Length: 420
Image (tube, rainbow, N blue to C red):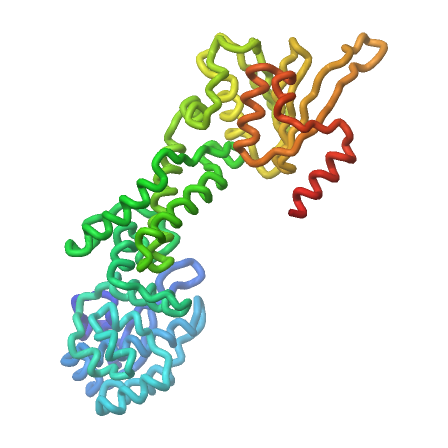
């Protein structure tokens, strides 16, 4: 039978229970193989209970020292009870100087004490008892997270000034640099907010008119890596010129914010508008000589486009690519059956082939084709070539050369490019 003898307001702080007549400290820590919380217990005495009941700081310090033992037990191991019991007298009953000396020798969970109000400066100097004089029963998990974020930055030599920290708080990236940034002005101290907004204004001016287009090769919501890198470089250079006092972390968070917002605008833009913004809207409905096109992928899936439909050929094609493109599906074709010509996009090789029918097959002989190859520079290059083809066919691609009919010559050119 188990009875709770003493518990605190915060449910995670270890409780004292009586089990089969014996006093024990009970705490939850870690998880088992099924991700369910694990519970550990070990015996204590009435003298230990008296300190735990009356001294929050010592109670928390004991918890901090026992947690590493729980971690060592893993998902199914047993708690080292002897080691846990051995911590009781030195932490709960010893003089403060002796407690501090113990904490210099053992593993302990620093974040637990920081979350409960420990003075970080005193903790860093090894004065654990003094650091816990202002301990609180209610934890502040964000305080511990910020401490660890600062430690990670310090380990790589990054020290934040007040404005640097304010920039990271504004974008929501103070705790985790991988967090998608957003604008959080209320997270910034009011005295620093005007300076933060000046930095943001510098970044916005630097990338005004720039955009990050979509890259359907990686899905309908993927964006162009080169556009991102171009905007990132532009923003970082402008911010560093105007605000040289900012550390790299602060500069990067501003460029990340600008790029993320631009990418979100692109993802939420209809494919037609995305084509127009990228400068490939010339194939609007009813223009050019293409009346019908067939799109196919490497899996044999086909989609037809007709000029009198509601959407442009390029928009339809890139949506088809975004829906179908995958690691094992990287070859897409646009064919004009009436004109006997088409293009084949090889995303795996950053190349394209234009294919022209020289002689139709007649049942006694196969058709004859002219196949020419060209290297392609990123999704922007593909957009240009697709746009040119849907407007004017293979003839319109002539100005986008050089085109190589010799496969060996093309392969050499591709290897030279890849080597660079």
